Length: 277
Ligand code: SAM
Image (tube, rainbow, N blue to C red; front, side, top):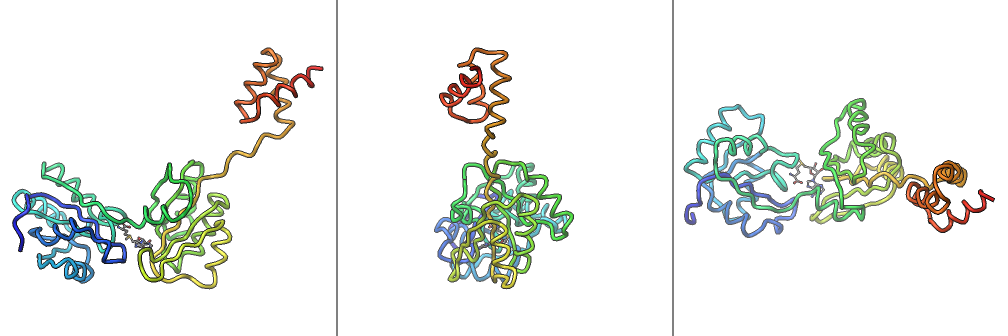
């Protein structure tokens, strides 16, 4: 064992499929921590072997008995506790939030070893807007709950990120098309592994593509934001101009309508003069 770490909680991101993505700093913490809280000891044993760690593991879930969490938080006073998930970043659709919450409440030292997360990796592959996004985790399995969840976010001007599984994929994509509109989307599977693949298209196209052949492996669905409001029709623009001209001089009326509809101001000014004549 290497030298002792400072006591506290170390949130350690692991790979999402490719062991080579474990960062050197994360590997070092896994070799030096007093204990490693894991979801599944068999899954994490492989990563620990890869990191050259012989540190003891302890199974932990947020729904573990309160006593398990309390004992871990207690140990953090004098020992280093690493938190590791089966894949990727702990707490992201994985256990850990309650452990961090309680460790913080107890005044323990907390640090994170950042690394891969399938959500961000898929977002970067999608070619969809990244300036505003919302992580949705897994959609509920039941149709009504799934539709309700989609309805909650349908109006948001944000790219949406969903975790999915192969057997549910086609149905989920169809439900998204129904609940969100037929938006542009991307399906990424097996990121960082041998059979990594990203397919793009509308939700309806992608749903049809996977209907007869559910894909194998781990999947993330990225759904683009709703489309722009359709351009104002000529009648709408005329009506708005006429109304504005009753209150304002022609140039100001054209400016107001141009701003409202996102139209060209000079074109609207010319149209306003026509209407006036
Ligand atoms: N904590 C993990 C993270 O940071 O990405 C996510 C854990 S969640 C229980 C597992 C889900 O993440 C999978 O069902 C899949 O939707 C997604 N996932 C994990 N690894 C993936 C990969 N290599 N390619 C695509 N999706 C992946």
